Image (cartoon, rainbow, N blue to C red):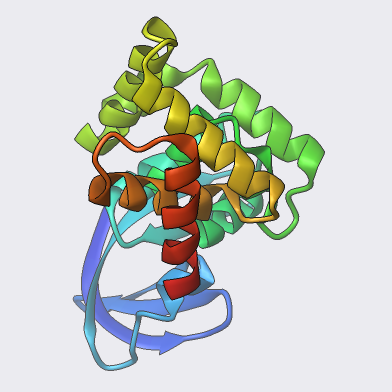
Length: 210
């Protein structure tokens, strides 16, 4: 199986890129965000997931091994195919996906094209049960999984509770869950032992400046 390709980009279309590797042209399917960073005539290195079926062999390209692993993990969910997985990774980076799963943020996952709330619910539910696999991919993901465990073990922690309440409040105001968590995290770094109200105000400023 092909796991990585490095070569010259020959052309880029809406769904694929053609990459020349030592005289052999490989057609690579990728998310629009990945394809947008590929330029004809320039060299590119992509992590590759090879999908083999009875009627086809298709290569999917990713800018990092972590994203390839996220693509593979998403397809372990019943009803999620390659197209759905690419759609999710178009709107959420791997760390954002794992963060959404950890926070059970169905709305964030449902933003992906072709992924409704029912399928997003299944993705979140099934990946929740695979926390060990999520934690094994990168140190960043492990940190998210560990944070979830820490929060569950110490529900009375006022700092954790304040952050969770602030994110919830922002979500109810209509802000995207991923953006809300980012803003609250940035706000918490600038404040000394902040309460919920202070976090919300500071996070709103962060969102307005974004």
